[in-house]
Amino acid sequence: MTQSERRAYLIRALLAEQPGYRDLAVPQSEAEQKRLLRALMNLREPQEIDAAFLRVQDAYLQEEAARKGITALDELTPVEPGLYLWQGDITTLCCDAIVNAANSGLTGCYIPCHSCIDNAIHTYAGVQLRLACARLLTAQGHPEPTGTAKLTPAYNLPCRYVLHTVGPIVRGALTERDEEALASCYRACLELARENGLRSVAFCCISTGEFHFPNRRAAEIAVQTVRAHRGEIEVIFNVFKDLDREIYRTLLG
Image 1 (cartoon, one colour):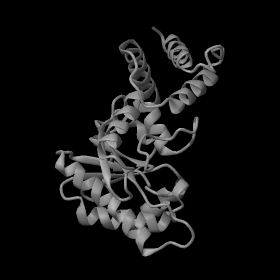
Image 2: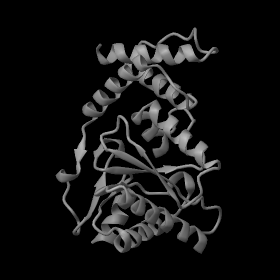
Image 3: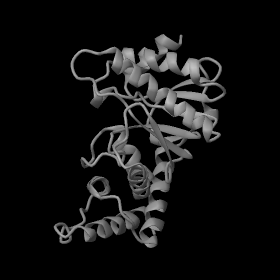
Image 4: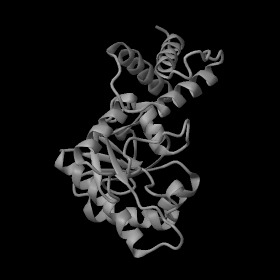
């Protein structure tokens, strides 16, 4: 199958699961098809799907990742021993684990084509990730608490694992409790990585953006906590916005 054929197959299969959408035509343009496919993946509840779908999906997502370009840890230059700063799409980063800024439901963002990192990671990992997260949540019997972490396979992402952590949501003025909760996210991810023998972790800017944690203070907590607790783990501070890149550049010298 070509990428175009795979994409059309996946769209038709996902539409067939939705009674209200079964008669929806597959768009003609590549951009519209990609947007529809992502939207359908975002809306899909965590549930099993047949092996044929997974084979096509996995081939499609891995080819998409290769086309976007994969960046490996050994291509980066440390800003200090064991610490890196990298600006780019975290779903194209090849290291032991990337960190997902999750919500307490843990199963990803259900808003079609939303720009949050949770949406992107679940989209490009594939539908298996949502199901894996749902099983973790079912096993523990309650929403994921703020400041803790869970580990799952990364499926079709170029990294090996995803560390899911729920950062604090800032409502109004920043509090010490918010700051401690954010530091706990970094500590929990590093501890879980260490328990599982991981040697490299890429952190996104947890709780900034949708959760309204001030960018500079978030970066200060991230750098301070990682320096104190990373041990032998190599850490990549992944930023997407120019604002965060400049903040981390200043903090890391």
